[in-house]
Length: 112
Image (tube, rainbow, N blue to C red; front, side):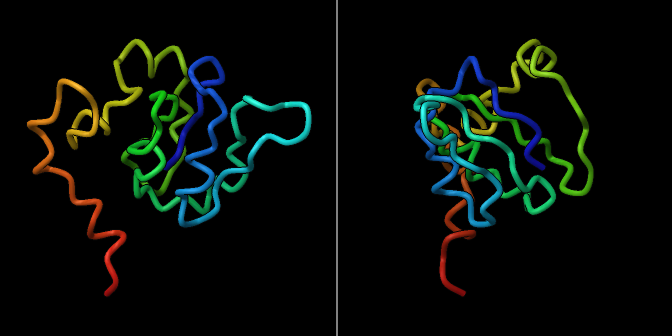
């Protein structure tokens, strides 16, 4: 489940807002251009990792547990090297292209 968006890492591009199939995020509005979106509907998250995979700033952390919120702090995520860990695991970041065969996200987007 989506756990957090780092306001220091996020550049407010809102790619996560656009890519989320469950409309979990709320874009910052008005004067807050460049601000991180909010996690507005956390319980709707299906732990698909699309937001984390598409975030160019490695500003999101999605915990693998789809049922419960862990409440992990941003400092703990950073210390554990978890920001961008899903992107690295599926080969979507520089230096990890050899992992691309592990990427199964096409299954989420393919018509059934």
